[in-house]
Image 1 (spheres, rainbow, N blue to C red):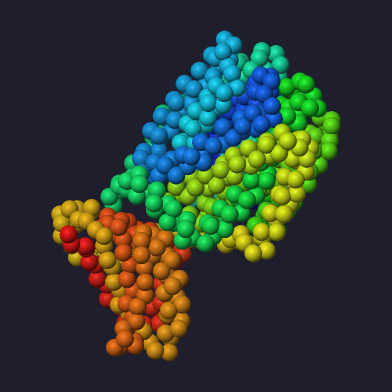
Image 2 (cartoon, rainbow, N blue to C red; image 1 turned 135 degrees about the vertical axis):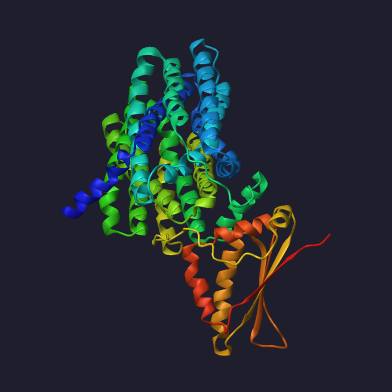
Length: 528
């Protein structure tokens, strides 16, 4: 009983922080408006006599910008002032939302134009999202980060519960254009809070990255991070199948009830279930591993998807979508927390962006696919096969298990910097490529262990900046090994010094037990 009480207290503790509290309040208003816009767009598409394919493409238009802009958005979110970026994107979304409302209210909207403007609105959100999610560690204390993430999830899904139901009522009373206009007004609160936020200025100790270099670094980091790769694969495959329920829900609701209120109720139940799932997950995670929790959520969501295709009344569908919403938040929230726990500060926005790329890409492809299946074989058949596919993804845990432990990703900048004059060091930033060699004198009986550990260490070198890496043995001296790796530029090598983490410390200290003395390090720059 005492543990549960402490857990509840820690869950809500971040709200004592005024900046975080103001952001949450403003964000819930904005997210309510966003869900109202989503319901309005889907219902307007149905009202324009568009088929299931065009209705499903509404969700594709919302998800596709996250797929197309994820990488540059993440890179920009790590190399520019995040506060200014958020203000720019919020202003862009206000302008698009006003245009969307104006064209709808004046009767000039068409299915194609609706898809274009939905895409443009989502593009602003896609550009903002990595920076928005990355500011969380700047706003709350480190010990409150997990709780703040959970509160964010509850806020989003509370908006999911309120927004669609409110949209259904407003659309029924005042029309779709009014819902779009309310969405435009919902951005004001976020803009005010961000304008008033005094973000601490951080002094750079290394040269700023370029957009291209930052993007390459993000791809390289994910490529050489096994835990992150597993998370990406599981999320992409799972959401390809799971996207069917949300993509086809407007058409399913229309087939059961001609009123927009029915669709709003179903989405509201989905969001309400997600809130309940977020609260329940606090207790479930204390008992079960991440793998068991996620697999259970996948099974529940799969069964709900298949069952939805067999029901023909709003109350029964509402109960099913409530369960689906609870399973959905378990699936999504745990993946987000695991990504945050396995990503260091310097690349966080970029890895979050790639996560969104995978998630939204899977949903965009899945929505289009299941929309096409529904057009040819019917909504009920599409939901059955999508649910069956979702159920099959639970088996991925047998050979692609989710990472469990939380690791220490604080920087461990302990490598000796080469003795270079400060002025010369500044001039060298663009010089390269840089060849770094490290000579080891290995204890003969520890050779096999050394080589095995070095190949693990090589993955860390490549993850943090090396474009090529190798370990070589001297043919004339069997105890002498030379590690070599190439970094694109001197500036990138300086960043490499700051990217090694406390979690990498164990393998480096283990390597030291295999050698007789401190290794000899040399830095060589390519000469034109």
